[in-house]
Length: 443
Image 1 (cartoon, rainbow, N blue to C red):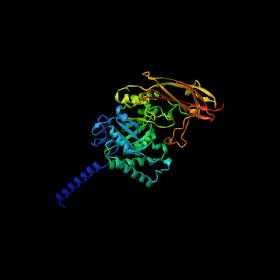
Image 2: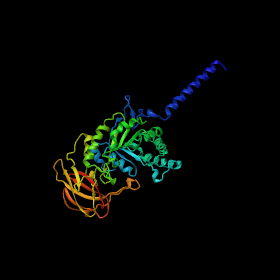
Image 3: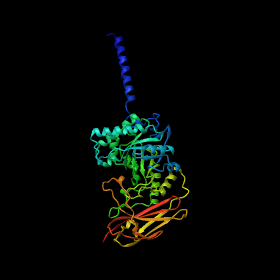
Image 4: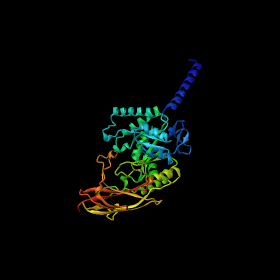
């Protein structure tokens, strides 16, 4: 072979190898923090030169000021919010359409089956079937103008220690990026469990954002996240008052609920001191829950009642989102007592006896207040599935001599745990709530 031919073949081979390396490098999936390079997508997370992460929507920075829930979207928009979060797609078209109508975006949750419900993440066929079912949902809604982000699963780690769960989540996130490159992917954890977050960082490279549900746990969110391997951005996907699992308990294990006003100040504090303070990794938040929800009690997470009357938490979020206070503020409950005792006093009462209930309430505008009292038996989800809880029927026959802030309660014959609830309304669609747990027994 002549030197010329040898040199020519060498040059061609070199060019081919260089082209192959260039082509492979461009077409391979980005790993680590490389995926946060701007690519001019509809929605994308971009890492800035100074290390900050910013969510962009249609080329403009987009900080999430959102609420988790399925109703009252017009109020989110009117109060200065811009997004909603839901954790399943059962009513996806209505949710997306309603959000779009009100100028809001949606983090749309893709519900993944849980192991306690019989799903086996070691079964490759089942995992593939679930991925294909979710793919059809993604294809159906990926072009909706209200879509912001895909939520892949919700607190799945709580169902077991099977690491195959994370492989399944990553597989779904990869599928989403293939069929819908215009919207980021996320998954949700409760607080920041180091072991779980490290598994996500290791086994779920296709996830763009970490979503964190955290209530009282928000106080050390920044420190706990810094101890993990997660280096990307996050969203506080649920926050609000203290959760029932992190509250003080009575001696019979009933969690003591904050008043609606205490929840409001709790929410304000953490929004200002935790969520807004992190300008490097936090992309925004979703307050929980925008509407009414039965979970442990009918009031624990409910920012509104069934009629849409608003608690002080709604007004706090309006002020935080828009900088404007409501024209008429919610009433306030300073305390509720039963038998001259507060909830922390461990209230034990004898069956079929009468006791005095009392409260102190006021209204910032001195509106005339309407007080409604009721007693409900305590409930607890035996299977741990709080999503299936149903509010028990009230026991009106136990209450008498109701005179606004005072009443007489006659305890039931049946021993067990109960709560005395107080609802205070001001006639302007505003509401305050409080309750006190008590236990009936012969002693």
